[in-house]
Amino acid sequence: MIIFGLRASNIGSVSVEQSSCSYCQNTATQNITQFGKYFHIFWIPVFPVGKSTFSECVHCKRTIRKKEFSPELKNTYEGSKSQIKRPLWHWAGLIILGLLFAAVSILSTIQ
Image (tube, rainbow, N blue to C red; front, top):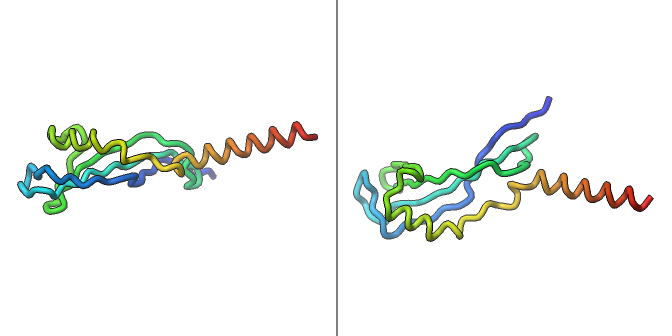
């Protein structure tokens, strides 16, 4: 039996200082968080599949998706997008397979 599927992990957050929540009107309470989805086999990440971005108000806990961002949230997200990088371990399965393939090819040329 092979266990496989999709999982997600938090890959980064950015605090938004100059924005106010559209629901509770509190200022400087927004956090933009990005989650990375990846395909796994036996809980070992093989390759990334996509990303999801959300904004959450720390005060009222209202969460909105990236497509619902206000213009100021979009500007903040675009400016801080370079700070949020996908971790290398999301590619762990392909890296292991590449190293295994390289080792087998090197060992086969030695003999």
